[in-house]
Length: 87
Image (cartoon, rainbow, N blue to C red):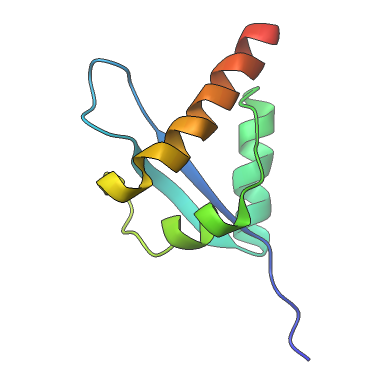
């Protein structure tokens, strides 16, 4: 049986600058581990959402997320904002 590799994706969003969040990194296995490591080194909160990551990994790098993902990504951004404020 094939083992599922961990996947990760990173988004960039600048309020009042960007129209929508953009996918800036994606990968699986060691690349996913590195994305998570870099986020933690930079004190960026990491949230696990395997279903969302699966969809994000199908996008091209530097692509804005499609409108159908706005709600799911908004929840992630709200989480990151709350966690950042606690730090």
